[in-house]
Length: 379
Image (cartoon, rainbow, N blue to C red; front, side):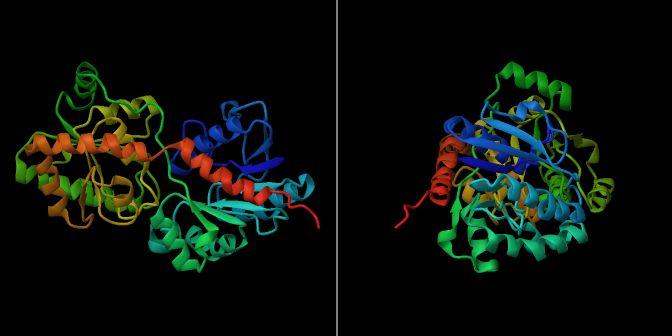
């Protein structure tokens, strides 16, 4: 059997949510089913570390698809032509986009419909592209994978897709996130915050991640608590962050905020593992991988009570309204004043994380692959 996979989000040292899902799913897929042939399609030169086994071949198709016009050319011409010429048993697309000209069975992964819920949070042309094409992709796909029950219901409601056509396969736990020793935490805090305790945000600095409200809430927390806690923001800056800059410049306690930008995986693990708590108050998520990373690091979590985050957090986090600054600030105060609550959240997180496994999710997806590629006997 020959399986072709769209892997254009496998970018060395630049893995965000889709890239993390792609990497972990594919590692498990190709190693658990080495009897099949896999062709990974990239839109630029790729790192050989993404060729996970001998049964994988990497192919670069041009043009490099990093703009809506180029997305269209890549999927509807380069990918369509490749599928026509190579005649795979299945085409898997991991980033929510598909070739409408695909002449084979297709498995589409739609992580979320953030662009439907908050279209102004992404560039205008990208928003128009997604809103026009994603319903067509969803209907074209032979089957759809998504990463939470929340996202599944969103897809069903918006695109009138039959429930049986969508399978939920959760994200799993990323390698490397673990509890740190007291000495390790002390060393990180000395270098990062001059030894002070800190809350951390970990993830892309994208508008829907709600960083301006996090900064406002942190100011309120500092005023109410009088504590010397810091706030550390770790992640790559994205489109449309003028509001963030404006809010930061107007903060009373902006000197207590540390922006680290994008860091490598090892540094991210150390920063998170040394934090007092993760503050992840995005107003929309299809999943929310940093929540699991905090659970694995035995770091308590404050997260939002909207979209998929309650589903991922279970009873292992303080859930807050991401638009209520006082509620967020009060949750931070609650954590620093109640050591018993902090310990309960850590213990619950240790149990909650066991519900999420890349191996289990890959097996769920494989069952759908088998259904799509089964050869029915002729009459």
